[in-house]
Image 1 (cartoon, rainbow, N blue to C red):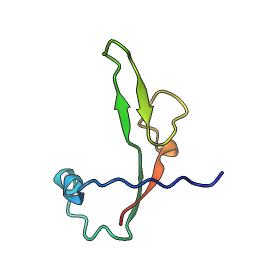
Image 2: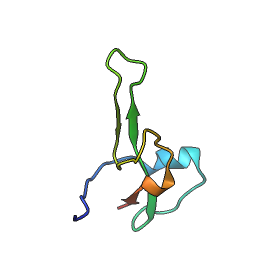
Image 3: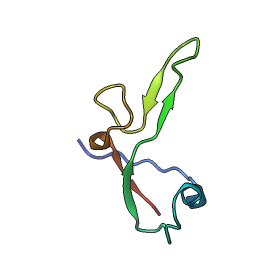
Image 4: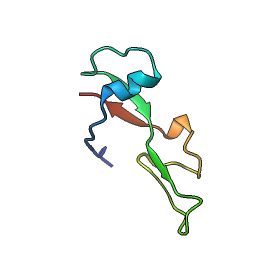
Amino acid sequence: MPEKMFSFFIPFALFEHYLDPLGAPTGQVSRGNFFKCADESSHPEWASWSPVDRLDFHRPHCFGTIRFA
């Protein structure tokens, strides 16, 4: 199955707020996941950008490739 491509804009400064300076983003590649949890709502739901093999979003082997441009 071909890899799906999605584009999102997240200011690099947001990452640098929590990490050290990262340099120019263009060409950098990382791995991670983005997720949404609504477990304490009237209609509990969970979603992740990269599929997970169980309801645990902190599973590095399930992380997707993030390419910065």
